[in-house]
Image 1 (cartoon, rainbow, N blue to C red):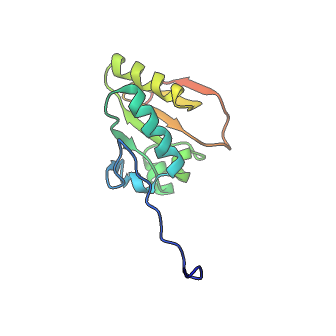
Image 2: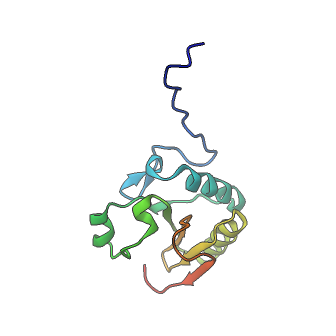
Length: 130
């Protein structure tokens, strides 16, 4: 076996997410694999589809949508999950907590979650924005 060659890239495989599926203006492939792995676990707990309306954002995209300057979206560590009714919202939040997310924001039209380790931890925000 020739160990001088670069090993092949291993593409992560998820049960509920495809790397090519949209996450806002970008794809799931552009998100941190640890984030997608946790989302995949949460999706299994929730038992409902997760439609990712925002994932990785460029600085310009973040500014255009009114994102905070230190948003975890800028580092591909955050997603917004579409949510239009209270039953789905409850299932999503419960599943995110069960999967180990500790940074969650509940908004009228989506639930934000991220895996940032540089932003404050153990945060659950209820917001009237978004």
